[in-house]
Image (cartoon, rainbow, N blue to C red; front, side, top):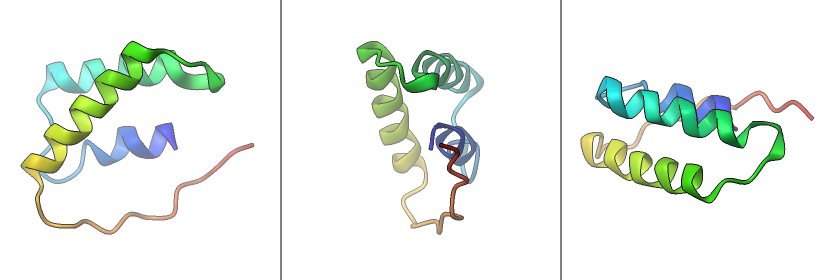
Length: 67
């Protein structure tokens, strides 16, 4: 799901490079099942910003889950 999120915020009207860098760092802190409140906050903020830039619904492909 983290991979899918990282790809999704790069679609449509993408976030700026600084925001994308923050997303990547946050995703890295959450990989492997780790929890980092600051990383979750960053992803929440950036996802809201992405939705505001892309108000029309975008169909999502089925993510590849690896467990």
